[in-house]
Image (cartoon, rainbow over all chains, first blue to last red; front, side, top):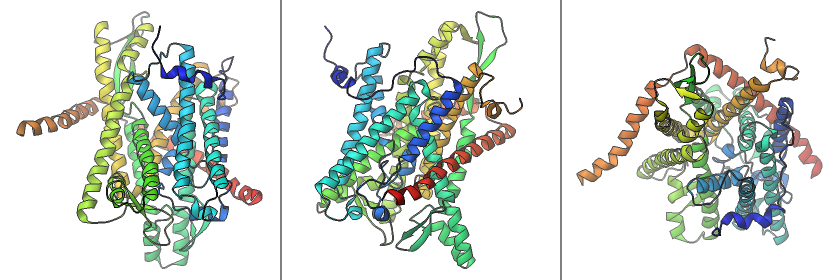
Length: 488
Length: 67
């Protein structure tokens, strides 16, 4: 009858993998807020140190992914070693596969949707398993558990990280299935990014590194430096320290924030009019950042994946010069550093690594890195705007169902017009956003400005869905009425 | 060769031309709207950050308790 489908392989797993049931009644507005809030709270609480990794030694893990971590809400040496990376990777992978008809799935069927979800969940857990094995076997945890790593400890670490990912997929599913607002991944990302930003600016913890005790927050560090050092060196050292966030990152982040907020309000206004009811014409905005921060997220998902495997391979074959020159090589700049930096290979050119080999390689790095970010984001947004269910065809179908027409266009021309506007908007938006991101990274942002870009655009998406929900059925007896209608 | 180069530059220039045309047609936020939005989002973001950071701070005693 029907040919073999990958999706059908998921059938036996459907009953094994835990699943969130869709709520029977429609969730109340208040409930949704509480569910979202509590899920985010649980996600943040998951940053427990891995059993087996000594708390005191957590800092001694030399971190090769430090410039990618803020974007994915991951934290080194904790259960959230990979944060939301496995979930995002599997989501992007399968959605793109389904959109490009590589995976045969009929989203109108309920059974197919359930199987697709199981496939995504299973893939993210599996990816997390693979990542943790890659890291454990490449000696990432060795310095923090005592060398050599025993097999039990290794298995324990892998099991913990994998199970945490399974748990996080359930948290995401909880929000996705209508208990919370809009997308689960975006909600968790927003809160993780916001708290990471607070941690990096006003973090009051003091951690012991080889350079002595250092405050984590950049502003706290500045205050401390001003009190203890002469003014000039105090300011300089707050700008250029490498182990924790510095003032340079802080200012780049603030500038990026201002620019992205400005761009987020760019919109192309279509004048629409109801064909059924005689009414005033309204404007229907199509945002410049049509895909939000997804193109950027996708690009950095690719980079994070490349870096995990690049790190594992380059550690495994440390003596192989071919791997070193062509793939990647990670090294520590100074003995006091807690990060690994990329020093050579393909991945060096795809990173904002501060290592300076020669003027030519630095120049090439700048060009290739920006080019990679911009082209990946643009090509992603091009595909995404047609597969994500918000394409011109889909929107014109919705318009037709609701009896809406665009002023100045005949009914037949609406689809054509929307098909022209939406891809242009999403591609242009992605292009500009990726340009900003590439600049901020090359000026020494190390992930912080990118994370804030992702954080505020996803925050805006969630805020929009909260507001539209509030306007549609915001009941007067909601206990959050004060927050949303302060004038009441 | 020249033809190849032309093709290579055609895609980006086309993209930039369409992009700028689109941006010029866009409604841009005026200063008042921009300041309002940036204040609202900024405060929201910082508030979320503080709450999240508070949760992170809870961790410190827990870590020492469980180890």
